[in-house]
Amino acid sequence: MTRTVYVNGEYLPEDQASVSIFDRGFLMADGVYEVVSVLNGKLLDFDGHMARLQRSLAALEIVNPLAENEYLDAHRTLLDRNAIIDGLVYLQVTRGNPGDRDFAYPPEDTPPTVVMFTQAKPGLADAPAAKTGWKIVSVEDLRWGRRDIKTVQLLYPSMAKMEAKSRGADDAWLTEDGFVTEGTSNNAYIVKDGVIVTRELSHDILHGITRAAVLRFAAEAQMKIEERSFTIAEAQEADEAFVTSASAFVMPVVEIDGKPVGTGKIGAIATRLREIYLEESRKAAV
Ligand code: PDD
Image 1: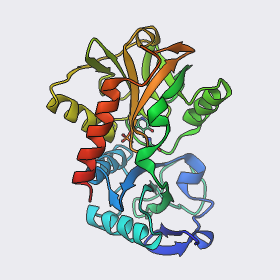
Image 2 (image 1 turned 180 degrees about the vertical axis):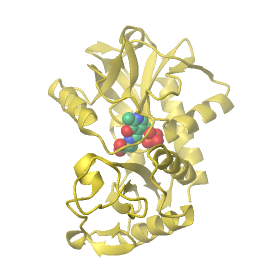
Image 3 (image 1 turned 90 degrees about the vertical axis):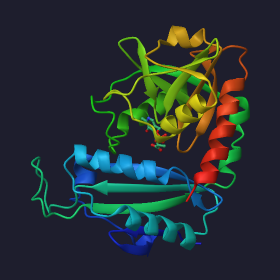
Image 4 (image 1 turned 45 degrees about the horizontal axis):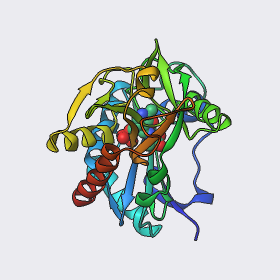
Protein backbone atom coordinates (compact mmCIF):
# COMPACT_ATOMS: atom_id res chain seq x y z
CA MET A 1 0.00 0.00 0.00
CA THR A 2 1.41 3.40 -0.96
CA ARG A 3 1.44 5.76 1.99
CA THR A 4 -0.74 8.86 1.75
CA VAL A 5 0.94 11.99 3.11
CA TYR A 6 -0.19 15.58 3.69
CA VAL A 7 1.45 18.60 2.04
CA ASN A 8 -0.08 22.07 2.37
CA GLY A 9 -3.69 20.97 2.48
CA GLU A 10 -3.40 18.13 -0.03
CA TYR A 11 -3.40 14.39 0.54
CA LEU A 12 -1.03 12.74 -1.92
CA PRO A 13 0.72 9.42 -2.52
CA GLU A 14 4.15 9.77 -0.92
CA ASP A 15 5.95 9.48 -4.28
CA GLN A 16 4.02 12.48 -5.62
CA ALA A 17 4.51 14.74 -2.60
CA SER A 18 7.23 17.39 -2.70
CA VAL A 19 8.36 20.75 -1.33
CA SER A 20 10.51 23.38 -3.03
CA ILE A 21 14.32 23.25 -3.01
CA PHE A 22 14.08 26.85 -1.71
CA ASP A 23 12.01 25.84 1.31
CA ARG A 24 13.53 27.39 4.47
CA GLY A 25 13.19 24.05 6.21
CA PHE A 26 15.48 22.46 3.62
CA LEU A 27 18.00 25.31 3.28
CA MET A 28 18.13 26.67 6.87
CA ALA A 29 16.51 24.03 9.14
CA ASP A 30 14.02 26.87 9.67
CA GLY A 31 11.11 24.83 10.91
CA VAL A 32 9.65 22.95 13.83
CA TYR A 33 8.06 19.55 14.26
CA GLU A 34 5.97 17.33 16.49
CA VAL A 35 5.66 13.57 16.82
CA VAL A 36 2.37 12.22 18.17
CA SER A 37 2.03 8.54 18.98
CA VAL A 38 -0.96 6.45 18.02
CA LEU A 39 -2.28 3.47 19.94
CA ASN A 40 -5.33 1.56 18.80
CA GLY A 41 -6.00 4.21 16.14
CA LYS A 42 -6.08 7.09 18.66
CA LEU A 43 -3.73 10.03 19.25
CA LEU A 44 -1.91 10.32 22.60
CA ASP A 45 -1.42 13.70 24.32
CA PHE A 46 -2.64 15.50 21.18
CA ASP A 47 -3.50 18.79 22.93
CA GLY A 48 -0.08 18.92 24.60
CA HIS A 49 1.72 18.44 21.30
CA MET A 50 -0.40 21.15 19.65
CA ALA A 51 0.30 23.55 22.52
CA ARG A 52 4.05 22.97 22.16
CA LEU A 53 3.84 23.36 18.37
CA GLN A 54 2.25 26.76 18.92
CA ARG A 55 4.97 27.68 21.42
CA SER A 56 7.80 26.59 19.07
CA LEU A 57 6.28 28.53 16.17
CA ALA A 58 5.78 31.64 18.30
CA ALA A 59 9.42 31.49 19.46
CA LEU A 60 10.48 31.59 15.78
CA GLU A 61 7.84 34.20 14.85
CA ILE A 62 6.14 31.86 12.39
CA VAL A 63 2.37 32.35 12.29
CA ASN A 64 0.66 29.01 12.88
CA PRO A 65 -1.04 28.31 9.55
CA LEU A 66 -3.69 25.92 10.89
CA ALA A 67 -6.08 25.74 13.83
CA GLU A 68 -5.88 22.82 16.25
CA ASN A 69 -9.05 21.24 14.85
CA GLU A 70 -7.56 21.39 11.33
CA TYR A 71 -4.45 19.57 12.55
CA LEU A 72 -6.68 17.04 14.28
CA ASP A 73 -8.71 16.45 11.10
CA ALA A 74 -5.52 15.99 9.08
CA HIS A 75 -4.06 13.57 11.65
CA ARG A 76 -7.25 11.52 11.65
CA THR A 77 -7.51 11.52 7.86
CA LEU A 78 -3.95 10.22 7.58
CA LEU A 79 -4.58 7.52 10.19
CA ASP A 80 -7.66 6.47 8.29
CA ARG A 81 -6.17 6.50 4.79
CA ASN A 82 -3.09 4.60 5.94
CA ALA A 83 -5.00 2.18 8.19
CA ILE A 84 -2.74 2.99 11.16
CA ILE A 85 -3.52 1.11 14.36
CA ASP A 86 -0.25 1.69 16.24
CA GLY A 87 2.40 4.13 15.11
CA LEU A 88 3.34 7.78 14.88
CA VAL A 89 2.26 10.92 13.07
CA TYR A 90 5.10 13.27 12.13
CA LEU A 91 4.20 16.93 11.57
CA GLN A 92 6.54 19.65 10.33
CA VAL A 93 5.91 23.35 9.78
CA THR A 94 8.60 25.49 8.11
CA ARG A 95 8.90 29.19 7.27
CA GLY A 96 8.00 28.22 3.71
CA ASN A 97 9.42 28.91 0.28
CA PRO A 98 10.70 32.45 -0.39
CA GLY A 99 11.66 31.43 -3.97
CA ASP A 100 15.38 31.99 -3.34
CA ARG A 101 18.05 31.73 -0.63
CA ASP A 102 18.49 34.63 1.80
CA PHE A 103 19.46 34.77 5.49
CA ALA A 104 16.77 37.38 6.16
CA TYR A 105 13.31 36.00 6.84
CA PRO A 106 10.98 36.21 3.81
CA PRO A 107 8.00 38.64 3.77
CA GLU A 108 5.41 37.87 6.43
CA ASP A 109 2.82 36.79 3.87
CA THR A 110 5.03 33.87 2.72
CA PRO A 111 2.88 30.82 3.55
CA PRO A 112 4.50 28.30 5.91
CA THR A 113 4.96 24.77 4.58
CA VAL A 114 3.02 22.07 6.43
CA VAL A 115 3.92 18.42 5.96
CA MET A 116 2.52 15.40 7.81
CA PHE A 117 3.07 11.68 7.41
CA THR A 118 2.39 8.50 9.34
CA GLN A 119 4.73 5.72 10.42
CA ALA A 120 3.13 2.35 11.13
CA LYS A 121 4.59 0.65 14.23
CA PRO A 122 2.52 -2.42 15.01
CA GLY A 123 2.76 -3.34 18.70
CA LEU A 124 4.39 0.02 19.58
CA ALA A 125 3.38 -0.25 23.25
CA ASP A 126 4.88 -3.75 23.55
CA ALA A 127 8.40 -2.90 22.37
CA PRO A 128 10.66 -5.75 23.56
CA ALA A 129 13.27 -3.17 24.68
CA ALA A 130 10.92 -2.08 27.49
CA LYS A 131 11.55 -5.49 29.12
CA THR A 132 15.35 -5.38 28.81
CA GLY A 133 16.08 -1.63 28.97
CA TRP A 134 18.46 0.58 27.05
CA LYS A 135 22.20 0.97 27.29
CA ILE A 136 23.29 4.59 27.30
CA VAL A 137 26.61 6.31 26.65
CA SER A 138 27.38 9.94 27.50
CA VAL A 139 28.28 12.39 24.76
CA GLU A 140 29.01 16.09 25.09
CA ASP A 141 26.00 18.30 24.31
CA LEU A 142 27.07 20.50 21.40
CA ARG A 143 23.58 21.69 20.38
CA TRP A 144 22.47 25.33 20.26
CA GLY A 145 21.08 27.19 23.28
CA ARG A 146 17.33 27.02 22.50
CA ARG A 147 16.64 23.32 22.85
CA ASP A 148 13.18 24.15 24.21
CA ILE A 149 12.14 25.00 20.64
CA LYS A 150 11.43 21.76 18.78
CA THR A 151 13.31 22.68 15.60
CA VAL A 152 14.23 20.32 12.78
CA GLN A 153 17.95 20.97 13.38
CA LEU A 154 18.59 17.34 14.31
CA LEU A 155 22.09 16.81 12.95
CA TYR A 156 23.85 16.79 16.32
CA PRO A 157 21.33 14.43 17.98
CA SER A 158 21.75 12.20 14.91
CA MET A 159 25.55 12.25 15.32
CA ALA A 160 25.19 11.42 19.02
CA LYS A 161 22.87 8.51 18.16
CA MET A 162 25.47 7.16 15.73
CA GLU A 163 28.19 7.57 18.37
CA ALA A 164 26.01 5.57 20.78
CA LYS A 165 25.47 2.82 18.19
CA SER A 166 29.17 2.65 17.37
CA ARG A 167 29.83 2.11 21.10
CA GLY A 168 27.26 -0.70 21.30
CA ALA A 169 24.61 1.39 23.09
CA ASP A 170 20.99 2.21 22.31
CA ASP A 171 21.15 5.96 22.85
CA ALA A 172 23.27 8.82 24.20
CA TRP A 173 22.70 11.13 27.15
CA LEU A 174 24.07 14.56 26.36
CA THR A 175 26.11 16.35 29.02
CA GLU A 176 26.94 20.01 29.46
CA ASP A 177 29.18 21.45 32.21
CA GLY A 178 29.23 17.96 33.71
CA PHE A 179 25.44 17.60 33.95
CA VAL A 180 23.04 15.54 31.85
CA THR A 181 20.76 17.68 29.73
CA GLU A 182 18.62 14.99 28.02
CA GLY A 183 18.78 12.06 25.60
CA THR A 184 19.17 12.50 21.83
CA SER A 185 15.37 12.46 21.48
CA ASN A 186 14.00 11.94 24.99
CA ASN A 187 14.10 13.32 28.53
CA ALA A 188 16.37 11.65 31.10
CA TYR A 189 15.61 10.55 34.68
CA ILE A 190 17.22 8.70 37.56
CA VAL A 191 15.65 7.23 40.70
CA LYS A 192 17.48 7.12 44.04
CA ASP A 193 15.91 5.99 47.33
CA GLY A 194 12.46 6.28 45.76
CA VAL A 195 12.97 9.87 44.53
CA ILE A 196 12.59 10.54 40.80
CA VAL A 197 15.15 13.10 39.61
CA THR A 198 14.93 14.89 36.26
CA ARG A 199 16.44 18.13 34.99
CA GLU A 200 14.36 21.26 35.56
CA LEU A 201 12.72 22.98 32.56
CA SER A 202 14.75 25.76 30.89
CA HIS A 203 16.10 26.62 27.44
CA ASP A 204 18.55 23.71 27.88
CA ILE A 205 16.08 20.89 27.20
CA LEU A 206 12.94 20.14 25.27
CA HIS A 207 9.86 20.43 27.46
CA GLY A 208 8.70 16.88 26.84
CA ILE A 209 4.98 16.29 26.59
CA THR A 210 5.52 12.76 27.89
CA ARG A 211 7.67 14.23 30.71
CA ALA A 212 4.80 16.48 31.81
CA ALA A 213 2.32 13.58 31.79
CA VAL A 214 4.65 11.14 33.58
CA LEU A 215 5.51 13.67 36.31
CA ARG A 216 1.82 14.38 36.80
CA PHE A 217 1.01 10.65 37.11
CA ALA A 218 4.00 10.12 39.45
CA ALA A 219 2.79 12.95 41.72
CA GLU A 220 -0.74 11.52 41.70
CA ALA A 221 0.73 8.16 42.75
CA GLN A 222 2.45 9.96 45.71
CA MET A 223 5.92 9.40 44.24
CA LYS A 224 8.60 11.95 45.19
CA ILE A 225 10.02 14.13 42.42
CA GLU A 226 13.06 16.44 42.36
CA GLU A 227 13.51 18.66 39.31
CA ARG A 228 17.26 19.34 39.23
CA SER A 229 20.35 18.54 37.22
CA PHE A 230 22.38 15.36 37.83
CA THR A 231 25.72 14.04 36.64
CA ILE A 232 26.61 10.80 34.87
CA ALA A 233 28.43 9.68 38.05
CA GLU A 234 25.24 10.21 40.09
CA ALA A 235 23.22 8.35 37.46
CA GLN A 236 25.63 5.40 37.60
CA GLU A 237 25.07 5.21 41.38
CA ALA A 238 21.28 5.49 41.08
CA ASP A 239 18.85 2.64 41.76
CA GLU A 240 17.12 3.10 38.39
CA ALA A 241 17.20 5.25 35.30
CA PHE A 242 14.79 5.80 32.41
CA VAL A 243 13.85 8.09 29.55
CA THR A 244 10.54 9.39 28.25
CA SER A 245 9.34 10.42 24.79
CA ALA A 246 6.27 10.21 22.60
CA SER A 247 7.74 7.24 20.72
CA ALA A 248 9.44 5.35 23.58
CA PHE A 249 6.85 6.25 26.29
CA VAL A 250 8.76 5.33 29.48
CA MET A 251 11.87 3.31 28.60
CA PRO A 252 14.07 1.84 31.36
CA VAL A 253 17.84 2.42 31.19
CA VAL A 254 20.00 -0.40 32.58
CA GLU A 255 23.56 0.66 31.76
CA ILE A 256 25.38 4.00 31.55
CA ASP A 257 28.89 4.23 30.06
CA GLY A 258 29.42 0.51 30.60
CA LYS A 259 28.27 0.50 34.26
CA PRO A 260 25.06 -1.27 35.30
CA VAL A 261 22.45 0.99 36.92
CA GLY A 262 21.17 -0.56 40.16
CA THR A 263 20.78 -4.30 39.62
CA GLY A 264 21.42 -3.90 35.88
CA LYS A 265 17.81 -4.95 35.25
CA ILE A 266 14.81 -2.74 34.49
CA GLY A 267 13.58 -0.92 37.59
CA ALA A 268 10.24 -1.23 39.39
CA ILE A 269 9.45 2.51 39.31
CA ALA A 270 10.19 2.87 35.59
CA THR A 271 8.09 -0.21 34.89
CA ARG A 272 5.20 1.11 37.00
CA LEU A 273 5.37 4.55 35.38
CA ARG A 274 5.30 2.97 31.94
CA GLU A 275 2.17 1.00 32.88
CA ILE A 276 0.44 4.06 34.35
CA TYR A 277 1.43 6.28 31.41
CA LEU A 278 0.14 3.77 28.84
CA GLU A 279 -3.08 3.13 30.75
CA GLU A 280 -3.92 6.79 31.40
CA SER A 281 -2.87 8.04 27.96
CA ARG A 282 -4.91 5.39 26.20
CA LYS A 283 -7.93 6.46 28.26
CA ALA A 284 -7.47 10.13 27.32
CA ALA A 285 -6.47 9.45 23.68
CA VAL A 286 -8.43 11.14 20.91
N1 PDD B 1 11.61 13.52 20.28
N2 PDD B 1 14.02 15.74 24.17
C1 PDD B 1 14.30 15.75 22.86
C2 PDD B 1 15.60 16.35 22.41
C3 PDD B 1 13.38 15.20 21.93
O1 PDD B 1 13.67 15.22 20.62
C4 PDD B 1 12.18 14.63 22.41
C5 PDD B 1 11.14 14.05 21.48
C6 PDD B 1 11.94 14.63 23.80
C7 PDD B 1 10.68 14.06 24.40
O2 PDD B 1 9.58 14.88 24.10
P1 PDD B 1 8.10 14.29 23.99
O3 PDD B 1 7.83 13.54 25.26
O4 PDD B 1 7.26 15.47 23.85
O5 PDD B 1 8.12 13.37 22.80
C8 PDD B 1 12.87 15.20 24.64
C9 PDD B 1 10.69 12.98 19.30
C10 PDD B 1 9.92 11.82 19.80
C11 PDD B 1 11.43 12.71 18.02
O6 PDD B 1 12.29 13.50 17.69
O7 PDD B 1 11.14 11.72 17.34
